[in-house]
Structure formats: structure tokens, C-alpha cells
Length: 117
Image 1 (cartoon, rainbow, N blue to C red):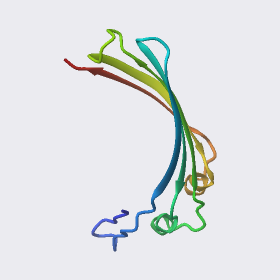
Image 2: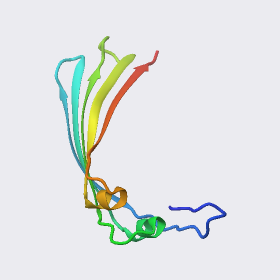
Image 3: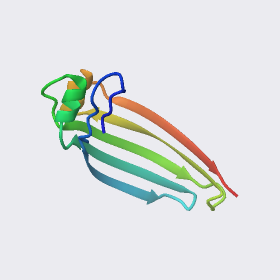
Image 4: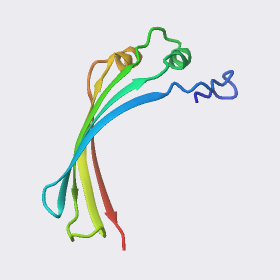
């Protein structure tokens, strides 16, 4: 929900909802190394709550496409140490461009090390 602060006015309990279509592939390259590929198409179900919160009209439903690629490495062939890293890009849709007024893609790199015994 979009809640305003107590000083700013009435809360809006209408959730805009997100529709997400995903396709992915996990490929085991070696027993220690796995490749992870994912593509997500993201769109808003209802744009009216977003338009009201942002005081902006005519926001499109399409938020964009998220593409990511990563690697999962298990150096000891067990789950005691797992290293995951990769990169992702968001290709803005018309709705994202309406809100942020930019057509530039957003990039992200990530890394996660899990040690458990």
C-alpha cells in the first residue's frame, strides 16, 4: 500500500499490483559451477494509485524488462561455501520512462558469499 505520513494526509490502501512474467535457465557447467540466466517482464496492474501518489497523469503500465546473468560456484563440491555473482540490467519500459523521465538502462552488479557449517 502507499501510505502517507501522519502529517501528509490520507493513506491510500490500493495496491497497484505488479504483473511479472519470468523465463530462466540454470545450466550446470561443471559440478562446481552453475550459470543462471533470467529475464523478467514487469508491468503494473493498476496505474491509478501511482498516478495519485506522484501527482502525475498518463503513466503507462509497462515498467520494463529485467535481464540478469550470474554464476554460482561451490569450491568444495558442497554447500558449506557458495559464491554467487553476476550482473543485471533493467531496460526501461514506457511506464518507467513516464515516472523517471529517462530512457537510460539501469545496471547492477552483485556478489554474495555464503559460509555455513
